[in-house]
Image (cartoon, rainbow, N blue to C red; front, side, top):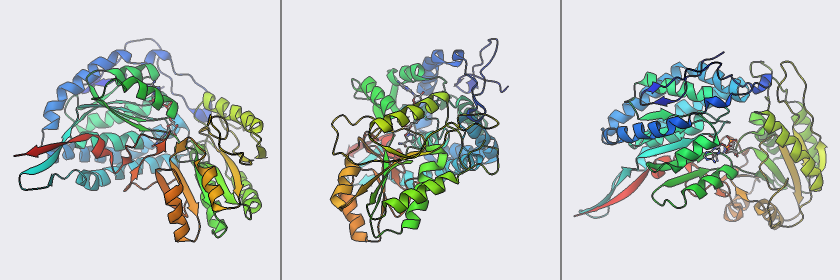
Length: 478
Ligand code: NAD
């Protein structure tokens, strides 16, 4: 059993002397529960205090010195890449090549953010005596999701630390050992004490961090339900910036002039990669009526050809869901789908295999659009975060736009058409933060901002733009 070291505060792990230990949860090998005692709520105050104390020195180091530490961290991630990938897969279940790709994306992120990203903050002279320059905020809390436990918080701590802030990171309670490994990498990189701190736990620990009066910013990546709670917690504290990167009910809109083969290939991968547990996973296909039958049959055939398997199996293409709760949620939505009038094309069942895990068959439904809904909840509207796609058909482009926008989320849309003017029209009308042309919804570019509108985010896109929200501009006049 791996040793759980507890929180990492002010440059060291504070290990707890208790009997037993935290057991690793491997969703591909069923169910081992994590003991509740691992929560480190008591570490919140010391971690924020350590980050607060480290802030002044760190903020006013030369930028090149801060970047030196970050480049060292990049080298440590590179050296420990196999260990990081193994840790991610074994904790959240995705197949090893996906975790390897996540680690590579995290390593590459340093290059983009430390060059182009920081370039966004170049101070600007408007007249000889008037200019503005960016100031770090202070202690930033980073709350991570389980599905990309390294890559997503990584983009945020690179931006926060490079611009002079200090960090308290709380990984998902589903990926505590990956969080611990990340803290070990920071330790190995030799960062000054208190610049990066780790606390472990779930909602209670997250809430304590968010509410802490010395925290100047909260960067959250997770579900819209949690994001809304966090927003309420900070709304009475205008000095605290709150960055919310939340879920999606992402759609592909396929016009009758599209390359259907290309669209089906892209849709299959966008639906199934990471077992549908990506914020940008495909959940809806809105296809011209002339193509709906062919698309449905082909998508079902391709979906059935994706082998489920344990992350270490070389032929595994799709892993398990992350937890028993995620599996129960998936099956509950299958019942709701039928209640919402869906016709099942691929029906759901749990896959029994050895080792046993939370493996399910991907599902596809056909649905008729019934006009906009006021409450925006249920199968048609909720992010299920599992491999499930609902297929709608349309006759006219206006109808495709209406179906697309009848959704409380607005993260990613893919438009398949050969017509550039039609694509540009979609830019005008589709309510999303990321719009892709003739490509699937996954595979977001590291050199662009990434964020959503409506319930998917709050207008502070991350990706390349993270350095902007980690700082505030100060106007300087003489
Ligand atoms: P989650 O909302 O359950 O948890 C995210 C983090 O918030 C965890 O660290 C969790 O412990 C913490 N948390 C939970 N309740 C809290 C509270 N009340 N106060 C403070 N912190 C709290 O999300 P998850 O299941 O880990 O991740 C999946 C979700 O993340 C999906 O909705 C997915 O779409 C979204 N996501 C979004 C993006 C994006 O860039 N937009 C990227 C990846 C994942």
